[in-house]
Amino acid sequence: MRIAFANIPCGLWAGGYNYQRNLFEALNRYEPGTVTPVLFAGTADEDGEIAALAGIPAVEVVRSPVFDHPATGLAYPSDLARAIAFGLDGPAVAEFKTHKIDMVFEAARFFGWRLPFPAIAWFPDFQHRLLPHLFSRSAYWRRDLGFRVQIASGRHIMLSSNNALGDFRRFYPRASNGVSVVRFATEPPAGLLTTNPSEVIASYGLPHRYFYLPNQFWRHKNHQVVIDALALVKRRGLDIVVAASGSTLDYREPGLFEAMMREVKARGLETNFRHLGMVPLDHVYALLRASMALINPSECEGWSTSVEEAKSFGVPMILSDLDVHREQTAGQARYFGIRDSDALANHLLQVAQSADPVASRDILPNLEERVKAFVADFTRLTADVVKSSAVR
Figure 1 (tube, rainbow, N blue to C red):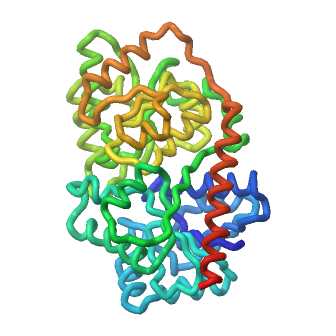
Figure 2: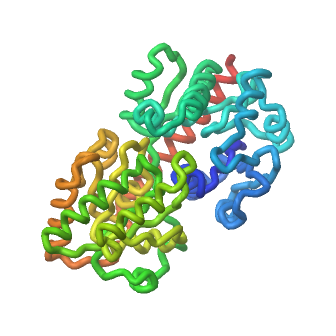
Figure 3: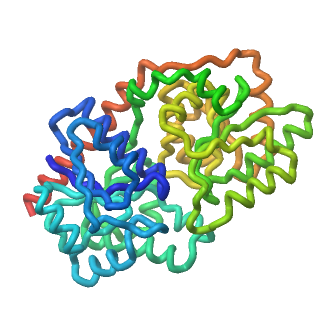
Protein backbone atom coordinates (compact mmCIF):
# COMPACT_ATOMS: atom_id res chain seq x y z
CA MET A 1 0.00 0.00 0.00
CA ARG A 2 1.37 3.38 -1.06
CA ILE A 3 0.48 5.99 1.55
CA ALA A 4 1.02 9.72 0.98
CA PHE A 5 2.52 11.76 3.82
CA ALA A 6 3.17 15.51 3.64
CA ASN A 7 6.54 16.46 5.11
CA ILE A 8 6.53 18.20 8.49
CA PRO A 9 9.67 20.38 8.84
CA CYS A 10 11.46 19.90 12.13
CA GLY A 11 11.79 23.64 12.69
CA LEU A 12 8.02 24.10 12.53
CA TRP A 13 7.02 21.05 14.52
CA ALA A 14 9.75 18.71 15.73
CA GLY A 15 7.24 16.32 17.28
CA GLY A 16 5.46 15.86 13.95
CA TYR A 17 8.70 15.29 12.06
CA ASN A 18 9.88 12.76 14.64
CA TYR A 19 6.51 11.01 14.66
CA GLN A 20 6.67 10.34 10.92
CA ARG A 21 10.34 9.34 11.06
CA ASN A 22 9.63 6.87 13.87
CA LEU A 23 6.62 5.50 12.01
CA PHE A 24 8.61 4.95 8.80
CA GLU A 25 11.44 3.24 10.71
CA ALA A 26 9.03 0.97 12.59
CA LEU A 27 7.09 0.01 9.45
CA ASN A 28 10.30 -0.94 7.70
CA ARG A 29 11.55 -2.96 10.66
CA TYR A 30 8.41 -4.91 11.55
CA GLU A 31 6.16 -4.87 8.44
CA PRO A 32 8.57 -4.64 5.48
CA GLY A 33 6.74 -4.54 2.19
CA THR A 34 3.33 -3.84 3.73
CA VAL A 35 3.43 -0.05 3.40
CA THR A 36 5.43 2.25 1.13
CA PRO A 37 5.47 5.72 2.70
CA VAL A 38 5.60 8.32 -0.09
CA LEU A 39 6.78 11.61 1.41
CA PHE A 40 5.72 14.78 -0.40
CA ALA A 41 8.10 17.61 0.53
CA GLY A 42 8.39 21.26 -0.45
CA THR A 43 11.27 22.48 -2.58
CA ALA A 44 12.70 24.56 0.28
CA ASP A 45 12.41 21.89 2.98
CA GLU A 46 15.73 21.28 4.73
CA ASP A 47 17.82 18.83 2.69
CA GLY A 48 19.34 17.07 5.70
CA GLU A 49 15.94 16.35 7.21
CA ILE A 50 14.62 14.95 3.94
CA ALA A 51 17.76 12.88 3.41
CA ALA A 52 17.32 11.28 6.85
CA LEU A 53 13.81 10.17 5.87
CA ALA A 54 14.84 9.12 2.37
CA GLY A 55 17.51 6.91 3.91
CA ILE A 56 14.87 4.69 5.51
CA PRO A 57 14.32 1.68 3.22
CA ALA A 58 11.03 1.75 1.26
CA VAL A 59 10.48 5.50 1.79
CA GLU A 60 10.03 7.39 -1.47
CA VAL A 61 10.46 11.18 -1.58
CA VAL A 62 8.76 13.59 -3.98
CA ARG A 63 9.90 17.23 -3.99
CA SER A 64 7.33 19.65 -5.39
CA PRO A 65 6.43 23.33 -4.97
CA VAL A 66 2.86 22.14 -4.40
CA PHE A 67 4.01 21.18 -0.89
CA ASP A 68 5.85 24.40 -0.09
CA HIS A 69 4.58 26.04 3.08
CA PRO A 70 4.79 29.42 4.82
CA ALA A 71 7.27 30.12 7.61
CA THR A 72 4.44 30.13 10.15
CA GLY A 73 2.63 26.89 9.35
CA LEU A 74 2.44 23.61 7.48
CA ALA A 75 0.11 24.89 4.75
CA TYR A 76 -0.90 28.19 3.21
CA PRO A 77 -4.40 29.44 4.13
CA SER A 78 -5.09 29.44 0.38
CA ASP A 79 -4.54 25.64 0.32
CA LEU A 80 -7.24 25.15 2.94
CA ALA A 81 -9.55 27.67 1.22
CA ARG A 82 -9.15 25.89 -2.14
CA ALA A 83 -9.80 22.48 -0.58
CA ILE A 84 -12.97 23.76 1.08
CA ALA A 85 -14.30 25.90 -1.78
CA PHE A 86 -13.66 23.40 -4.58
CA GLY A 87 -13.73 20.25 -2.50
CA LEU A 88 -10.26 19.38 -3.68
CA ASP A 89 -6.67 20.55 -3.36
CA GLY A 90 -6.21 19.95 -7.07
CA PRO A 91 -2.43 20.40 -7.37
CA ALA A 92 -1.77 18.03 -4.45
CA VAL A 93 -4.22 15.43 -5.76
CA ALA A 94 -2.54 15.57 -9.19
CA GLU A 95 0.78 14.72 -7.52
CA PHE A 96 -0.86 11.85 -5.62
CA LYS A 97 -2.26 10.43 -8.85
CA THR A 98 1.06 10.77 -10.66
CA HIS A 99 2.76 8.76 -7.93
CA LYS A 100 0.04 6.09 -7.73
CA ILE A 101 -1.04 6.72 -4.16
CA ASP A 102 -3.50 4.30 -2.50
CA MET A 103 -4.21 6.28 0.68
CA VAL A 104 -3.55 9.72 2.18
CA PHE A 105 -2.42 10.43 5.73
CA GLU A 106 -3.55 13.95 6.64
CA ALA A 107 -1.59 15.69 9.39
CA ALA A 108 -2.25 19.43 9.73
CA ARG A 109 -3.30 19.72 6.09
CA PHE A 110 -6.72 19.10 4.51
CA PHE A 111 -6.81 17.92 0.89
CA GLY A 112 -10.55 18.33 0.26
CA TRP A 113 -13.90 16.70 0.87
CA ARG A 114 -13.87 15.28 -2.69
CA LEU A 115 -10.47 13.65 -2.22
CA PRO A 116 -10.53 10.56 -4.48
CA PHE A 117 -8.47 8.45 -2.06
CA PRO A 118 -9.19 6.83 1.29
CA ALA A 119 -7.78 9.07 4.01
CA ILE A 120 -6.93 9.07 7.70
CA ALA A 121 -6.81 12.38 9.56
CA TRP A 122 -4.40 12.39 12.50
CA PHE A 123 -5.40 14.81 15.27
CA PRO A 124 -2.24 14.91 17.43
CA ASP A 125 -3.85 16.96 20.21
CA PHE A 126 -6.49 19.61 20.91
CA GLN A 127 -4.17 22.33 22.10
CA HIS A 128 -6.22 25.14 20.58
CA ARG A 129 -9.27 24.05 22.57
CA LEU A 130 -7.38 23.34 25.79
CA LEU A 131 -5.11 26.43 25.67
CA PRO A 132 -6.99 28.92 23.48
CA HIS A 133 -5.13 31.90 24.98
CA LEU A 134 -2.00 30.80 23.12
CA PHE A 135 -3.64 31.25 19.72
CA SER A 136 -4.60 34.36 17.84
CA ARG A 137 -8.24 34.43 16.81
CA SER A 138 -7.36 33.61 13.20
CA ALA A 139 -4.97 30.79 14.17
CA TYR A 140 -7.55 29.29 16.50
CA TRP A 141 -10.30 29.23 13.89
CA ARG A 142 -8.00 28.06 11.10
CA ARG A 143 -6.99 25.05 13.19
CA ASP A 144 -10.51 24.32 14.38
CA LEU A 145 -11.94 24.73 10.90
CA GLY A 146 -9.35 22.27 9.62
CA PHE A 147 -10.51 19.69 12.18
CA ARG A 148 -14.18 20.37 11.48
CA VAL A 149 -13.90 19.99 7.71
CA GLN A 150 -11.99 16.73 8.13
CA ILE A 151 -14.77 15.50 10.41
CA ALA A 152 -17.49 16.72 8.02
CA SER A 153 -15.70 15.03 5.11
CA GLY A 154 -16.04 11.66 6.81
CA ARG A 155 -12.36 11.12 7.46
CA HIS A 156 -11.44 8.29 9.79
CA ILE A 157 -9.88 10.08 12.75
CA MET A 158 -6.69 8.74 14.32
CA LEU A 159 -5.77 9.79 17.86
CA SER A 160 -2.74 8.91 19.97
CA SER A 161 -4.27 8.36 23.43
CA ASN A 162 -7.46 7.59 25.31
CA ASN A 163 -7.11 11.03 26.84
CA ALA A 164 -7.28 12.57 23.35
CA LEU A 165 -10.31 10.39 22.60
CA GLY A 166 -12.08 11.90 25.60
CA ASP A 167 -11.19 15.39 24.37
CA PHE A 168 -12.45 14.58 20.88
CA ARG A 169 -15.81 13.37 22.21
CA ARG A 170 -16.09 16.45 24.43
CA PHE A 171 -15.19 19.07 21.80
CA TYR A 172 -16.92 17.47 18.80
CA PRO A 173 -19.85 15.58 20.38
CA ARG A 174 -21.85 15.27 17.14
CA ALA A 175 -19.05 13.62 15.15
CA SER A 176 -20.06 10.17 13.89
CA ASN A 177 -16.74 9.38 12.19
CA GLY A 178 -14.84 6.22 12.77
CA VAL A 179 -12.21 6.97 15.42
CA SER A 180 -9.17 4.88 16.39
CA VAL A 181 -6.57 5.28 19.10
CA VAL A 182 -3.10 4.30 17.89
CA ARG A 183 -0.48 4.80 20.60
CA PHE A 184 2.91 5.27 19.04
CA ALA A 185 6.10 3.79 20.42
CA THR A 186 9.64 4.62 19.33
CA GLU A 187 12.63 2.38 18.73
CA PRO A 188 15.77 4.45 18.15
CA PRO A 189 17.78 3.12 15.19
CA ALA A 190 20.92 1.26 16.23
CA GLY A 191 23.05 3.54 14.06
CA LEU A 192 22.09 6.53 16.21
CA LEU A 193 23.18 4.81 19.43
CA THR A 194 26.85 4.40 18.59
CA THR A 195 27.76 7.95 19.63
CA ASN A 196 29.66 8.00 22.93
CA PRO A 197 27.56 9.85 25.55
CA SER A 198 30.65 10.91 27.52
CA GLU A 199 32.07 12.63 24.46
CA VAL A 200 28.77 14.37 23.75
CA ILE A 201 28.47 15.56 27.35
CA ALA A 202 32.02 16.92 27.22
CA SER A 203 31.42 18.65 23.87
CA TYR A 204 28.61 20.73 25.40
CA GLY A 205 30.57 21.46 28.58
CA LEU A 206 28.02 19.70 30.78
CA PRO A 207 28.72 18.10 34.15
CA HIS A 208 28.30 14.34 34.49
CA ARG A 209 25.06 14.80 36.43
CA TYR A 210 22.37 16.83 34.70
CA PHE A 211 18.68 16.77 33.79
CA TYR A 212 17.55 16.81 30.16
CA LEU A 213 14.74 18.95 28.70
CA PRO A 214 14.45 18.41 24.90
CA ASN A 215 11.44 20.65 24.17
CA GLN A 216 10.97 23.36 21.57
CA PHE A 217 10.67 26.85 23.03
CA TRP A 218 6.94 27.18 22.56
CA ARG A 219 4.95 28.84 25.34
CA HIS A 220 2.93 25.73 26.14
CA LYS A 221 6.12 23.69 26.57
CA ASN A 222 6.36 25.56 29.87
CA HIS A 223 10.09 26.15 30.34
CA GLN A 224 9.11 28.89 32.79
CA VAL A 225 8.24 26.46 35.58
CA VAL A 226 11.69 24.85 35.20
CA ILE A 227 13.43 28.22 35.50
CA ASP A 228 11.37 29.02 38.60
CA ALA A 229 12.20 25.62 40.13
CA LEU A 230 15.92 26.08 39.45
CA ALA A 231 15.81 29.39 41.32
CA LEU A 232 14.21 27.65 44.30
CA VAL A 233 16.80 24.87 44.23
CA LYS A 234 19.62 27.40 44.10
CA ARG A 235 18.18 29.27 47.10
CA ARG A 236 18.24 25.98 48.98
CA GLY A 237 21.97 25.77 48.40
CA LEU A 238 22.27 23.24 45.57
CA ASP A 239 23.55 23.91 42.06
CA ILE A 240 22.04 21.58 39.48
CA VAL A 241 22.06 21.74 35.71
CA VAL A 242 19.18 21.40 33.28
CA ALA A 243 20.35 20.93 29.69
CA ALA A 244 17.71 22.13 27.22
CA SER A 245 17.70 21.57 23.48
CA GLY A 246 15.29 22.31 20.66
CA SER A 247 14.12 25.01 18.31
CA THR A 248 13.92 28.56 19.64
CA LEU A 249 11.27 29.65 17.13
CA ASP A 250 7.67 30.13 18.21
CA TYR A 251 5.92 31.86 15.32
CA ARG A 252 2.97 32.59 17.60
CA GLU A 253 5.20 34.48 20.03
CA PRO A 254 8.41 35.80 18.44
CA GLY A 255 11.05 36.72 21.01
CA LEU A 256 9.88 34.23 23.63
CA PHE A 257 13.22 32.41 23.77
CA GLU A 258 15.23 35.63 24.04
CA ALA A 259 13.00 36.90 26.85
CA MET A 260 13.39 33.64 28.76
CA MET A 261 17.17 33.67 28.42
CA ARG A 262 17.27 37.28 29.65
CA GLU A 263 15.32 36.13 32.68
CA VAL A 264 17.75 33.24 33.22
CA LYS A 265 20.62 35.73 33.23
CA ALA A 266 18.84 38.22 35.49
CA ARG A 267 18.20 35.47 38.06
CA GLY A 268 21.80 34.25 37.97
CA LEU A 269 20.93 30.87 36.49
CA GLU A 270 23.19 30.86 33.41
CA THR A 271 25.20 27.92 34.72
CA ASN A 272 22.06 26.05 35.79
CA PHE A 273 19.86 26.40 32.71
CA ARG A 274 21.94 25.59 29.63
CA HIS A 275 20.45 25.83 26.15
CA LEU A 276 22.39 23.65 23.72
CA GLY A 277 20.55 24.71 20.56
CA MET A 278 19.27 22.32 17.92
CA VAL A 279 21.33 19.18 18.40
CA PRO A 280 21.71 16.14 16.10
CA LEU A 281 19.46 13.21 16.88
CA ASP A 282 22.32 10.95 17.93
CA HIS A 283 23.27 13.62 20.47
CA VAL A 284 19.68 13.76 21.71
CA TYR A 285 19.76 10.04 22.43
CA ALA A 286 23.20 10.25 24.02
CA LEU A 287 22.15 13.13 26.30
CA LEU A 288 18.92 11.36 27.24
CA ARG A 289 20.58 8.01 27.99
CA ALA A 290 23.14 9.56 30.35
CA SER A 291 20.87 12.07 32.12
CA MET A 292 19.67 11.82 35.70
CA ALA A 293 16.11 12.21 34.42
CA LEU A 294 14.01 13.56 31.57
CA ILE A 295 11.93 16.64 32.34
CA ASN A 296 8.77 17.38 30.37
CA PRO A 297 6.85 20.30 31.90
CA SER A 298 4.45 20.75 28.98
CA GLU A 299 0.95 22.16 29.49
CA CYS A 300 -0.48 20.02 26.67
CA GLU A 301 0.55 16.79 24.95
CA GLY A 302 -1.09 14.33 22.60
CA TRP A 303 1.41 11.53 23.32
CA SER A 304 4.93 12.73 24.08
CA THR A 305 7.79 11.58 21.85
CA SER A 306 10.39 12.45 24.49
CA VAL A 307 8.51 10.37 27.08
CA GLU A 308 8.41 7.43 24.67
CA GLU A 309 12.14 7.77 24.09
CA ALA A 310 12.83 7.90 27.83
CA LYS A 311 10.72 4.77 28.30
CA SER A 312 12.80 3.04 25.60
CA PHE A 313 15.92 3.38 27.74
CA GLY A 314 14.41 3.25 31.23
CA VAL A 315 15.35 6.90 31.93
CA PRO A 316 13.62 8.30 35.04
CA MET A 317 11.01 10.93 34.22
CA ILE A 318 9.77 14.11 35.92
CA LEU A 319 6.59 15.15 34.14
CA SER A 320 3.82 17.70 34.34
CA ASP A 321 0.76 16.12 35.90
CA LEU A 322 -1.29 15.72 32.72
CA ASP A 323 -3.75 12.86 32.34
CA VAL A 324 -1.99 11.85 29.14
CA HIS A 325 1.39 11.70 30.92
CA ARG A 326 -0.10 9.36 33.51
CA GLU A 327 -1.68 7.26 30.76
CA GLN A 328 1.60 7.11 28.86
CA THR A 329 3.74 6.16 31.86
CA ALA A 330 1.20 4.06 33.81
CA GLY A 331 2.13 6.04 36.90
CA GLN A 332 5.82 5.17 36.62
CA ALA A 333 7.19 8.72 36.87
CA ARG A 334 7.35 11.74 39.18
CA TYR A 335 4.63 14.36 38.53
CA PHE A 336 4.12 18.03 39.34
CA GLY A 337 1.45 20.62 38.62
CA ILE A 338 2.12 22.80 35.58
CA ARG A 339 2.46 25.88 37.83
CA ASP A 340 3.94 24.10 40.86
CA SER A 341 7.61 25.09 40.75
CA ASP A 342 8.00 24.06 44.41
CA ALA A 343 6.95 20.47 43.69
CA LEU A 344 9.29 20.36 40.68
CA ALA A 345 12.14 21.76 42.79
CA ASN A 346 11.55 19.00 45.34
CA HIS A 347 11.70 16.33 42.64
CA LEU A 348 14.91 17.81 41.22
CA LEU A 349 16.50 17.87 44.67
CA GLN A 350 15.48 14.31 45.47
CA VAL A 351 16.82 12.92 42.20
CA ALA A 352 20.01 15.03 42.29
CA GLN A 353 20.81 13.94 45.83
CA SER A 354 20.31 10.29 44.99
CA ALA A 355 23.35 8.12 45.66
CA ASP A 356 22.73 6.12 42.49
CA PRO A 357 25.49 6.66 39.92
CA VAL A 358 24.36 7.82 36.49
CA ALA A 359 25.32 5.44 33.69
CA SER A 360 24.57 5.43 29.99
CA ARG A 361 21.51 3.25 29.51
CA ASP A 362 20.72 0.74 26.77
CA ILE A 363 17.40 -0.10 25.11
CA LEU A 364 15.09 -2.10 27.37
CA PRO A 365 14.12 -5.63 26.28
CA ASN A 366 10.35 -4.92 26.37
CA LEU A 367 10.60 -2.18 23.76
CA GLU A 368 10.24 -4.43 20.74
CA GLU A 369 6.79 -5.64 21.79
CA ARG A 370 5.52 -2.08 22.26
CA VAL A 371 6.73 -1.00 18.82
CA LYS A 372 5.33 -4.14 17.18
CA ALA A 373 1.94 -3.36 18.73
CA PHE A 374 2.10 0.20 17.37
CA VAL A 375 2.91 -1.01 13.85
CA ALA A 376 0.22 -3.69 13.97
CA ASP A 377 -2.40 -1.14 15.07
CA PHE A 378 -1.39 1.30 12.32
CA THR A 379 -1.31 -1.23 9.49
CA ARG A 380 -4.61 -2.78 10.63
CA LEU A 381 -6.21 0.67 10.64
CA THR A 382 -4.97 1.55 7.15
CA ALA A 383 -6.19 -1.78 5.75
CA ASP A 384 -9.60 -1.37 7.40
CA VAL A 385 -10.03 2.18 6.06
CA VAL A 386 -9.13 1.13 2.52
CA LYS A 387 -11.51 -1.84 2.73
CA SER A 388 -14.41 0.27 4.04
CA SER A 389 -13.77 2.86 1.31
CA ALA A 390 -13.98 0.17 -1.36
CA VAL A 391 -17.30 -1.05 0.03
CA ARG A 392 -18.79 2.44 -0.18
